[in-house]
View 1 (cartoon, rainbow, N blue to C red):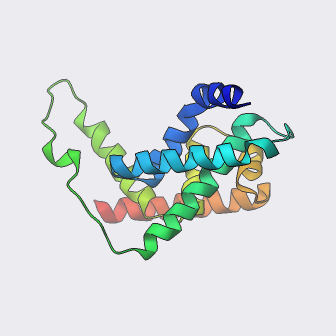
View 2: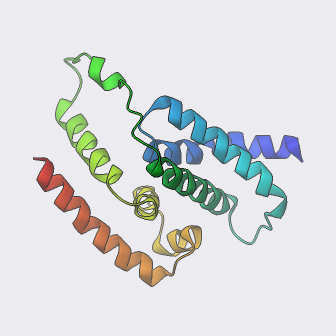
Length: 162
């Protein structure tokens, strides 16, 4: 069972990395969250019943773990550290406009709640509303409503950034 689990995690680790990247800004925090998600997946692996795709189940466990961690960290005082971005040198071949847009979007997404971040992540992964609903445990209709509200919020955050 352990070997099977490790193979599946290896094959689908991109899901975990995406969740970690959306919930954590600092590399050390991403690594900690990655380990926590893998531990939770291992703990709940025996209860996986193949009722849904493995990736759907994996997203659900990863997002629930990240949201729980996100809520715990919100209660702690800010533990800011220096970011790699502060020391980055401009590369002439580098598309700075696209990078700036991505940074603005990331900053806007970071202002969303835990559940909203989950929905945005899955939406950006081109998941259908039906699958987002299954992963997040909310109704498909509510996903649509929530996504419309999130889009408005993100537009507002992006406008106030400029």
